[in-house]
Amino acid sequence: MALTLTDAALNRVREKRETPNKWLRLGIRGGGCSGFMYAMDFVEEPQDKDRRFDFDDVKVCVDIKSYLFLTQTTLDFEATLMHTGFVFRNPDAAKTCSCGESFSPF
Image (cartoon, rainbow, N blue to C red):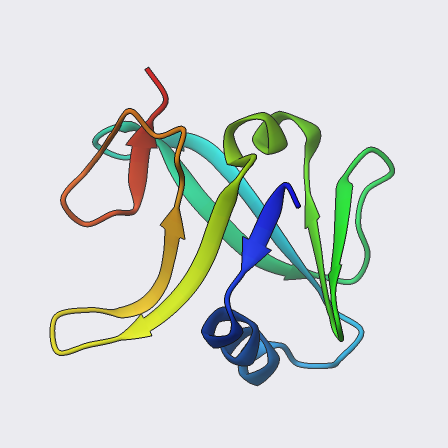
């Protein structure tokens, strides 16, 4: 599959969404110290050209431009002493910032 969510990420999405019919929108936008920042939001429904993924009762959509940079990415959720939150494990990220919230594919 082009995009993977771990069980921990799926459980956290289920906890955070307001209703079961909301979609998790993943994407990227310009910014951050490495060039691109990861973006997450809940939406009522995907846009027409979005890539769509089903993980049991969790539906995920990604806009077509972001999809090019998120292919083969795994979204995880971790809770440690140092960090609590979602973690993008992107094999196409050539470099990332120390906080892990931005990346560069070049």
